Image (cartoon, rainbow over all chains, first blue to last red):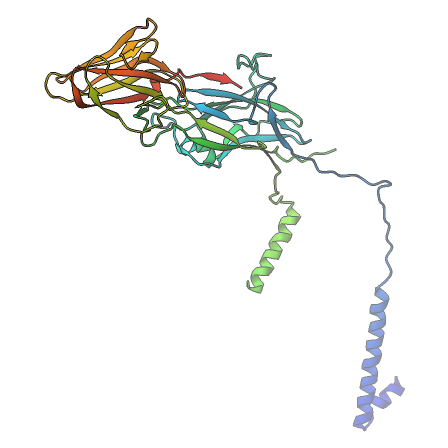
Length: 233
Length: 185
């Protein structure tokens, strides 16, 4: 220490400065050394499952087909007269492996005639209407009855104008009523032209006639996935 | 560009929510099916017109003719131009209101001999309506006369005077066609 005090007490400014720098540098180096020695190599241990866990996503697939013995939506309907009803039978299948719900029906008319441009359901509203009902098995094509067994399915839509269905989808099965994966809904579409009094005079149709019109219809059945779930297994 | 302080706040919020385990909205699956080809739905028509012959095209107007008088009369066809069979029809006959005209609108159960005015092969002449110059115009409503699509019925107007213009008009309502049906197909 006497040796060091010699330099700190030197009359030479340069000497004292150099001594101070030396001390600072020494202290700094020692500090770095201490800090460096605190960064040490840590140990790691890893564990993983012996074989891969396969996670898959499900499928939601909607299919429609004509009912047995019915034209379904495969052929047209001609020469409808006010008061007529034509029943067509369509099977809807939730063909994927996920449960579904919220089955809806919408319609598009590529021709856009008064057959689908008239809204409402009261007198004066003469556009095409549809009523949908369902059966738990295939419909009796001869009688139009659900009788084998006579158990109604969950899908139903009260008489609704096609005009309404071109604007807003109608609900056949409300959420959260489930449509099981692979389940088939046997649907009956009763397509009607409401009764109307209309007179043709000397071959001339009245203004706003419902006669001689044509609609080009696309029927869309839509389902959504059932509610997501959190499970412990 | 949002303020730096705002961005920091958003990041902090996201971190907080993640720590709390809050579920974010997920896209749900939807399945839709449509018919493979469009379904054409069409409405029928009911339309009848009186025209000169069974093959005359639709005139879209009442039928006017000059009366021949005598016992042979004027012949015309009531033709179905619609896509539906009819079962009844409403007919209006308008005659010249002058003098003491009498008119009879008639139909033959077989075929007319339009040269002699006879109803051939022992057929029966039925008078649909009788009109005078004092009762014109006269209408018979929902007269039973079934005419198939594209078919026609030959009518005769027997007028006691010649040289006058009479007019026959036809109207067809929904109720004059077939009854409504419910079918399964």
